Amino acid sequence: MRRRLAGVLVVLAISTAFPALAADTPSDAAPDVIGDLITGALTGAMPGTLDYKFRATLYHAGAKGIRALDSLGCKVVAMRTVAVDKTVIPRRSVLFIKETVGLPMPGGGVHDGYWYASDVGGAIKGKKLDLFSGDGKASMKPLMPLNLAQLTVAKVGEFKGCPPG
Image (cartoon, rainbow, N blue to C red; front, side, top):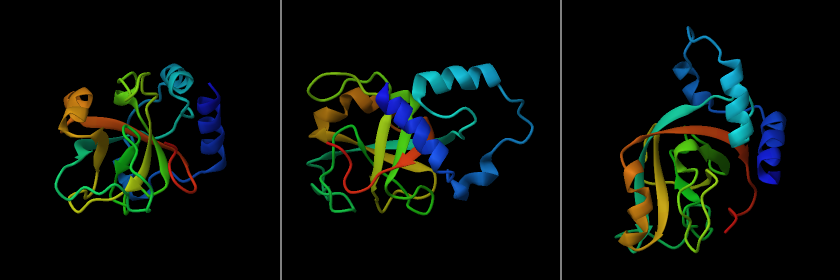
């Protein structure tokens, strides 16, 4: 609950969302005020926060070319680190990815949907995300239904330093 409240407060304090994607907002869609309030209560996103569709791919430690550190020099964190195109989503953005809520976390627990844009990749161009699953190919199993799928992504804040592990 505190994380959701913090996300709402961060959104209020930070008015930048995805400036590179402003052309993607539907202009003829009627607002769904009740739906926005319910979604905001469940996700911690502010009502009216713009959601975008991104195509997801997966990566894991042990794959060729994958390092233990992200592009910020921080340790990659399983089920938290996401690689982005930094011209579309600024690094150090906190993202909420609706489709990841409830997925099993390494070591137990379930995912709350929050990811940290702290990595980039040569193949990550435009509206694509690369979700870090953990150590070894087997770590990708819980995320496989999301591989190459369109995910609902909202920027809900920013972080300093390294993402929480």
